[in-house]
Length: 123
Image 1 (cartoon, rainbow, N blue to C red):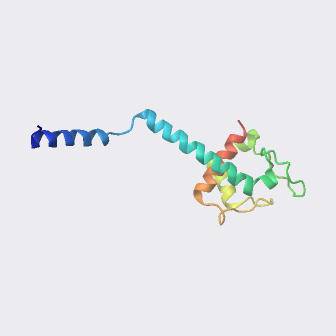
Image 2: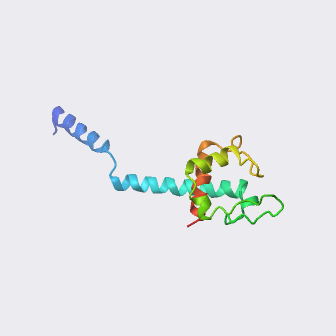
Image 3: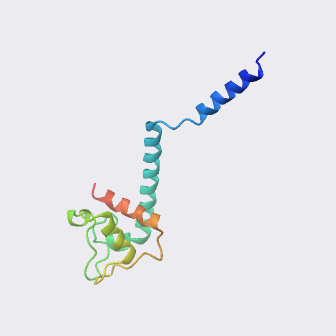
């Protein structure tokens, strides 16, 4: 039979084990899973809002009736732009081009996910 102090000590020990921080591997796995779902969401949003002009693969050849034509998102010139620059273009549009602003349609997270997908197009 256990004494009250033994049960209390075991309870405290078990509670501290269950509250232990996750290992680096678990944190890495969680981040990889989050990245995967954010990329998939970015692809979905790209297909809904961007594909019509920029094309399935981001090559800018989907819609030839606009001037200037949509840029090829896979080129080094586009991919060299910072996340802030590309994020601003998604948010505010591109003056002097048919690229409209998505600030009223896409949330901040949506824009980050689209940007993540645009980055993946060059790989």
